[in-house]
Image (tube, rainbow over all chains, first blue to last red; front, side):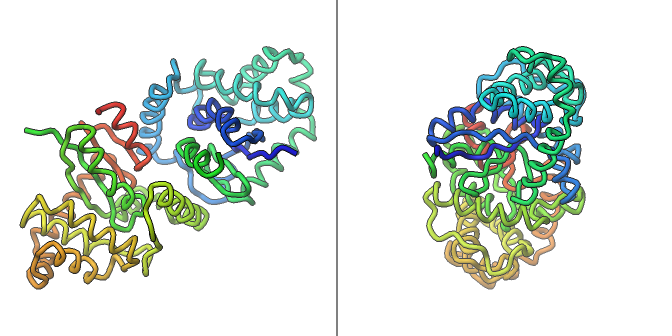
Length: 196
Length: 196
């Protein structure tokens, strides 16, 4: 079986968005598959009490840094979403519904939903942005809307989030490769140096 | 007058140590001088309530990541200091005493004191490690010990720390270049891309 790594991220995370654009290249460089693991970073903050963006000082910095990084990485038009920070339950659940339908489409869905949020500025908490992304990949909108409400899908997101906590994930993006933790897209080069 | 940038760091910060080894190259790449600005990160945490290493999860991660980074950056023998986290008042004050004696030696002192802490594992709160570093640069040990207690030196450290807070510094290392903030040694490449 081909080896893989776990790519944990929250759809409300700007650094997660930037990382999602590079994670395919990291997979190629390490000869591994990506396990797409959207989770709810709010659960980490609830458990550990440390919200990365809770302080306005850090939040202001992150937005400044994020736009600089986007520019350096050649990403055009990145913007602060309509509602931030907001729940990322709708795209996360939809991602796990798609995982059940066609796991090969999960990555494409993540990228489309992330683009809707961080380039088009959609509200993460509004299910329509995620549904549009699913529709663009050929899924039926009504099926997707119903599917995102399935108990099994809800349970999957809850389980992934709990597992992330248990495995020591405390930020987004966060990669676990052979159980080694790497926090942040700025560690991709390290992963490549050590596992490439 | 030659342009410069401000390099803020706490001697108890492992990422500050790694950054101190690269900051000279950054100065060369940007054609600027380094303003060495040891400060007390504890004042930031006191003001804003967010201690980076307060949570064991993050602290464990940081030590793991720090050793990996050291390896990738070719730094041999990095180790957790004898007492961590501890006050970095002694080396910080001594740095500002040296700034008054011979500002050109401040960088060499910072590097020597940082090496004592993060390579030799000395306690940041123990004045002897900093005094050894000063002595190795030709300063008289007794003068240095007395000088670190000067009111003007104490005031200088307090003032730098207060100014750091006012300027939005919330971590170590932290660079302000033309008042633009960059947090972390992993942003040196960005500074070079934008100001090089």
